[in-house]
Length: 49
Image (tube, rainbow, N blue to C red; front, top):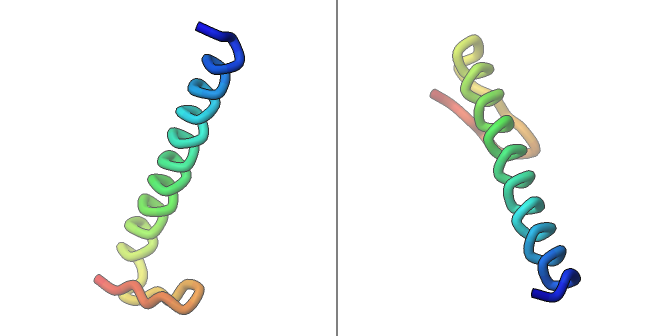
């Protein structure tokens, strides 16, 4: 396998995993915040229990 192609595949997978981790931390933070506050408005999006 060409090293450049292997690098592109590994880099793409790393970016996808990084994005999933960031989304997971955001959802976990929202879950924790909703334990203490019944409603949260964030960037125009209304979150409630």
